[in-house]
Every structure is written in C-alpha cells, then in structure tokens.
Image (cartoon, rainbow, N blue to C red; front, side, top):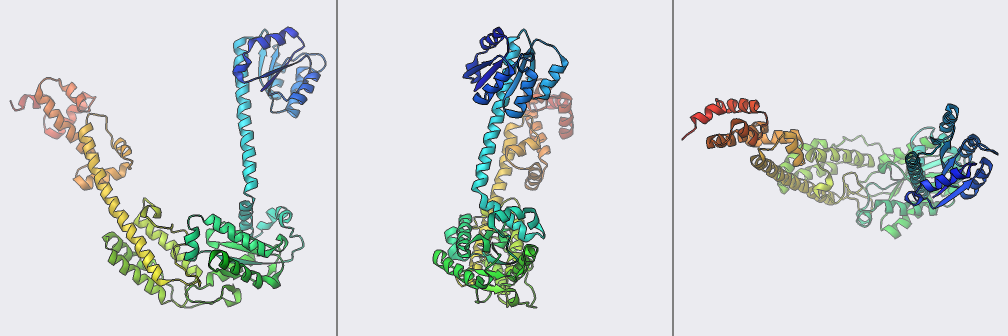
Length: 535
C-alpha cells in the first residue's frame, strides 16, 4: 500500500512520517506533496490508497483536493490534518469522503486510530472489489445458464420478450425474424440406458444435448436450444427461421442422440406464430402437444399439435392406491408391498394412453405419498437410486415406451427400502428415548429442562415429550422430579446433610421449591421424612 502526505510545512510531513510504524499497516511507500496541484499529479501517477492532507495550502488547498479525489480517485481514503478548528472545514471534509478531521499539533494515538480505520476500510472495499471481479468472471462463465433462464421466461410469460429484446437481438440477431415455432425435447422420463450413464450428472447430459441441438440448428439467427428453468419442460427449441427443414433437423438430432447416447427422444412441436409477440403462444401450443404424447404404445418421435389425441377414458390416480401401498409399507412385508404396487401398475395398464401429463401428475402424487411415509427425511435417506423429482421415476425403454414390469420391480424395491428405513427409524427412536431416560438417571442433579435434553439428543422438545409419555406412561418433567426425590430420600436418610444441601445436591437450588416438590410426591416435608425414616 502507498500513503501520500500533503502539507506545505515540511516539519509536519516529517512528523507524520516519524509518528507511524508504516510496516505495521502494510504501507511500503510514503509519498509527499506540498500543495494540492502536485498532490493530484502524484495521485494520478502512483494511485495511493491513503491520503493525508492539510486544508490551507498554496496552489490548490485541501478542499479542492478532497473534491478532486472524490471525483477522480474515490477509492483513496482521505484524512485531514489541519490547524483550523473550523466547522465549515469539518463539514466539507465529511461531505467529500474524508474519514476524519485531526487537529494540529498531532496526537499520535488519534493519528494511529484513524489510520487503522482508514486501512481497514480500504481493505474491506478491496475485498468487495475482488469479490465483484470474481462474480463477473463467474457470470461470463455461466452465460449459457443465464440465457437458459432468460429464454425460459421469454417463452413462459406473455410479453416477457420486451424486457430483454435488445439483449437477445445482440446475442442472436433476430431483428429480421417474423415467425417463430417452438419444439420441446422431452427428457422426462429418461430412457434407462441414458439414466445409467448420466443419472448422477444430469447437467452434463443437458449440456451435451443442447450442444447437439444447436450444432444441428446452425446459426443462432434461425433458432436456439436451451434447458428450460422448469425441469419438467426439458429442452426447448425456439426456431425463428428454417421451418421447412424443421422435421429433418429434429430427426437429425435424434440420430445424433442415438449414436452418442444410445436412445431417442420425443419432440413436441407447436404451430408457427408471429415473432416476437407470439413466442408465448407458440410455447403453449408445443406444451399442449407435449401433454398428449403417449408412453403406452410405440409410435413416432416427432409429434404435432394436430395429432394430439383427446381420450375420454377415466383418469387413474395414484392417490386411490396410496392407502394400500402405505399399509403395506408400514407392515414391512415385501410381498404385500409388491401386491399393492402391482394393483396400481395393473390399473395404469388398462389405460389406452399414458401421457406425459399423466406422468407429471403421478410424480406429484408419488412425492406426496413418500413425504407422508417419511415426513422427516427424503427419498435419498430411504436409499432410492434416484430422487422422486428426477427423470428416473418412470422406466422407459429405448423405444420410448413405459415398461410395466420394470416399473413394478423398481417401485416395489423403493417402497421396500422406505419400509426398512421406517423400521430402522422406529428402532433408533426407541433407543433414543431409553438413552434419555438413562441420561436423566445419571444427570438428575444438573439443571435439566426438556428443551436442553431434546437439544442434546438432536430431537424436538415436542417429540421427546410425546414419545417419553408413550413409552413410559409418565411425563418427562414428572420423571425428572421423581428421580430427584428418590435420590433426595437416600440423602435425607443419611443424616449428614441439611435439607437445603440435599435439595441442591439433587438439582434444586431453591430450598423452598425443593420442599414443595418433596411434599407433593411424598405427602410430607423433608424434615418430617427424616424424622420418620427407618432406623
């Protein structure tokens, strides 16, 4: 760091030099100037972090220098050392960023305290500047993620394009576009072969897939593929031109996916709309098509709005089978779990269409069901290979169809793991309550409260109170008092300690309160008990 001392008196500059151990503050260079103009030149050339300045000087006074620093070198910390105790000077010092106004003759303690504050303030701001630089670097690295978020809002919200039109125009050059079409690349559910490769790194999968899509789309002027912020919507392709080649490009993408990933994917396409005002409408049409894509039968990979079926069959809800599955899970019987899951799969198998919309709703029901079974945990705690919100919940084969046998097996295993987790949890809770009981019996003399005991065992106060009552048919606070009084009886029988000492030894610092509790539980006072104790 560098410090600049500005004063027209040489002896003042020398005094400041001698009063400070500069190495202690990390200051390696001390510069000097005798007036404001020469100080400005030094600041331009050397960029000092700390500036000491007098107020009255020839050729540019301290006030002018402070105003100049505020405009030209605002990072520099300014300290005024003046022989004038003038309110106007003090006020303007603070107004233009001065940290302190010290009077001559210089008080060394005040000088060091002010310098310490100035150095600390500069270091803090320097850390913040470095943090901003790092953040800007990260932003540059995450431009694709930022574009994904921006374009997700553009397609999902009416008129959102207006808020970022210039930005997207600069990025993609869409000024000549008059029409747009949206296609959704459905990545939920994922084929099992893909999930096995990328199940633990889905971000890498989406990165590879969007790169393949954008390479085939070509110039950004004709479209762009991005990962939608809503995981359920997969990858969205926004086309602003080249509509005649749309089918070919989507087919080429699937060929590339087949080569690199070993699987193909469904595309849901909407009709052309005016650009940019029709972007949201184009996305809604693609979304309507996506909701109708069926996974129950083998068919094409590219779907259009005109092909959307509208089945009038009765819907099947997982909730209708939730109580059977829950009962089977609580029983811990794997065969019962398999039977309950099997009934659900059979009901699904009777549907003519199992659409993407069905799967989204069943996923929501599955999360509710597992959440009720394990309210204080998540699916990972139950040992599931994939989380309920991941695209691995429904097994899809390489032909894009659901596999009922795989579905039955995987859900049976998942619910069996939950059953095992519940059994383990019950065992742990049982042990924890007995450990709490043992802890009370050993530490009754301490200042115990239910909250302190619960915190020690990483449990909630309410839970400990409820489970203790269930297990021992006695409130935990009542049990603490009973243990203390039983130990107090033994001490009173000993005859060596006063009643107050006995109370303190079993955890009661207030002798009157001890006597009150003792009387409540024994029907007599501690002194009466001592007199009537067995000889």
